[in-house]
Amino acid sequence: MKIDLSVLGRQFDLHKAEYEAAALRALNSGWYILGHEGENFETEFANYLGANFCVGVNSGLDALTLAVRALNIGSGDEVIVQANTYIASVLAITANQATPIFVEPDKFYNIDASKIEPAITSKTKAIMVVHLYGQASNMAEICKIAEKHNLPIIEDCAQSHGAKFQGKMTGTFGIGCFSFYPTKNLGAFGDGGAVVTADENFAKQIKMLRNYGSEVKYHNKVEGVNSRLDEVQAALLRVKLSHLDELNQERKNIAARYLTEITNAKIILPEIQTGAEHVYHQFVVRVQDREKFQFYLEQHEIKTIVHYPIPPHLAECYQRLAYKRGDFPLAEKFADEVVSLPMFNGMTKAEVDFVIEVLNNY
Image (cartoon, rainbow, N blue to C red; front, side, top):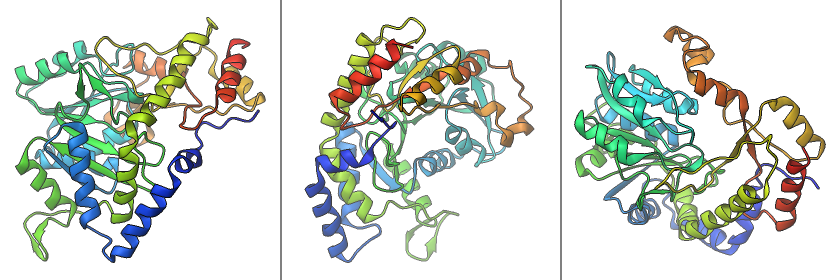
């Protein structure tokens, strides 16, 4: 049995007629940028999260980059971020000429809240929290620290659509930055992203920045960019948003089987933090000899991937930051051991059965 890491077509097939109708509605409208579909999606997504404002942009990276910029963070400033995140989190910081200050993750793969306060300096201007793999971070502790030091929280929610901490949606504790890349739990059919905020003025600032720095055409108040969620993607996202809870529940059901039925002691299963919800954008396990493990699964036609093999502080593009291997040993250990198993909507019982059987026989 051949099993891919993700099969996006099955999710499309689940609600094919609705997607097709939404795409045609957007196309027939004759208006393809900054129109009613985008406005309606922004309202609906804000309402879903329990947020005040949502601003659609071109990608999750743009959401993060514009959020950092709208906070007036730049050269000489520091932003605290976990060392085991995807590089996009860090690119958003350095794109604004600010400096990333890395801290270790906890055993749940999210930022270790106990490591944040020792990393704060007079140059610290924000704490960036990444809800990695779909599990909400320890927002109770992080919010206490942020409030104590009067620091804004930027939430990288690229993988946590619909996840909660103590009943509150990720993306609503600070400035929420979302990606709608096709593989995400709330994925579009191309690139897309959004910034979510409780602050009307901040939302207006993001709207200006995404549209060349203008509120009125040709009247450019600030130096902006071109980063807008198009009407067709917004229309398609409105359909998927209406089914997001059921799609997330399907992932949780697959994860529940993995967690209870994978019994091989050589495979370290993910843990869930008290108060946190996990929506399983990825189901990530750890193994000691990853190459051998992946080769074994490949021989059984089970596709896996590593999220992520090189922590940002060791990335070639950040050699100038002068980090070396051993500076963040836990993040580096995770990078050497993590493996993402097949996890997607429309995955059949037989496929889940096969993955579990093969893993238990490793």
